[in-house]
Structures are given as C-alpha cells and as structure tokens.
Length: 360
Image (cartoon, rainbow, N blue to C red; front, side):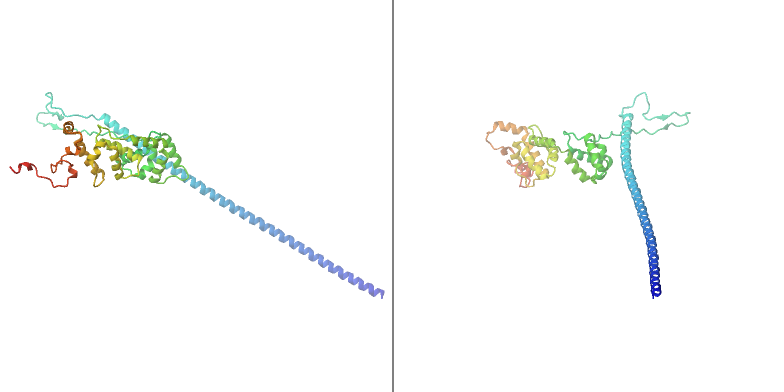
C-alpha cells in the first residue's frame, strides 16, 4: 500500500510539474509576444511621429515660400510704382526744361519795312551765270511756344488753403496733362511738400490706405483743415463786405472764393442770399425782390443798379431835389420810358422809339 501511494504521489507531482512547466512556457510565450507587440507599437509611433514632422516641415516650407513670394511681389509693385512716379517727374522736368530752352533760344521777330540795302526780304541763291534764274527760298516760320504754367504745391502749413489747392491742382492737371481725378490721385505725391508729403507717405503705406480720389479728398481736408484756419475763415467771412468803390463783379470774385472754402456744401441760392447781406446797403432796395433767385438774375439786376448808382446825373439830381424824396423816382425804365422801376421789373410792352413825336 505504501508503495502504491508513493507512486501515486510521485505521479501527481510529475503531473503538477509538467503543468507548471507548461504554464511557464505559455507565460514566456506571452511575454515574448507582448514584447514583440510593444516593439511594433513603438515602431509605428516613431513612423507616425516622423511622418507628422515631415508633413509639418513641408507645410512650413511651403508657407515660407508663399510668404517670400508675396513679399517679393509687394516689393516689385512698390518699386514699379516708385519707378513710374520718378519717370513721370523726370519726363515732366525734361519737358519743362526743353520748353524753357526753346522759348529762350527762339527769337520773336516783328515785321519791319524793307530796307534800301536789300532788294528782297526773302533769301535767294546767287546764280552762277546770268542765264540761270535765281532760286527763291520760302520764308522762315517762327513758332512761339508759351512757357508752362507753374504747378501748385501744398506743404501743409496753417496759412495754406487745402480746398482751393485741390481745385486748382485738378484744373491744372486736367488742362496740362488731361488727367482725371483717379490719375491725379495716383500721382498727387509729386505736388506735396513738407508735412503734407510726410502725411501722404504714411497713409499710402498704412494697413488701410485710400483706394480712390473721394476717400483721399475727405482725408486730406480732415487732416489740413486746422481749427486755426477755420477760425480765420470765419473771421474773414464776417469781414467780407463790398467796398464803396468796388464793383459787384470784383466783389463776387472775392466773396465766391471765400464762400467756396468756408461753406462748401451750400448751393447757388445760398450764395445769392449771402450777396444780399454783404453788398452795399443802398443797392439792396434798388435791386428789389428777385422772382427767380439765381446768380445770373442777381448779377443782371445788380449791374443795372450800379449803372444808376454810379451815374453823374443821380448825384447832381440828389443835390437839387428834396432829401426825403424817394430814390426810386430817379430810376427810368429804358423799355417803357416810365420812371419808378428798372427794365428787368417792367411788365409793360416796349414802347416804340420816338413815340412822343408820332403825333406831330
């Protein structure tokens, strides 16, 4: 019995040993497989990381190339713009110098009577023999080239007028070069000096530069319409009155120049209203009320009134007549020959000339 039990125990131990060995082998295989998988995962992670870095580097390189290309294009555009502006300035200077040289070198001849020392005013070739006729050359034609008008410039000083400058510059470039406002906007930098040129350079190179004339026009007036200049305009406007020896035409030129700068948004009707308040007071009742308050009607009535106001007969009659006599009694309509109103206010049909002799 003891031997059989020992054998059984030995068999059990052998079986357990074999099972344990099998488990150890399985565990070793699992560890080996896990190590292999871990190596593959690490390898895949490394490949993925390498690919991501490669793609990132490629994208970064592309972005750098694009940025470099954009900067190069921007530099080329600015260089082209500067080159074109420089060429235009040089050509303009050359043209002016050429015109000035032509004007200086071309004599302006005036016709003179023929002299006794010359048989003819036309040059002729002397014939080589008496039989050959003389060959007469055509007279020389002299062309007089007027010197170019000096272009207006603006420096941004407080005593300069920004709005009249823009108007004068537009008229100058239109008449001299045929530019419209957009072409003038592209080349206005060559007509600026000092602070104005510095300001123009800053806004052109800013992040939001003006793209057309209207925007630049607004920015220019906002920049250089200083409070000091506005106060000076206000003071000049209040002092602008017609002088006693100043005609209505001369006064209109003076007032209109100030009006266009001080009140740029007003219309012609407003200008007529201002004229009534700024002309000489004695002219206002003579002009009367306008049926159509246009500038043309006002000027017509004012010129007629000036002829009466400055006429010698008016002053002579005023010294002899009653001082309280109505001024309108001296006015005689040249259409109907009836005193008391102007021809522009006449409602009667024109009377025939010499009507007072028709009954004779």
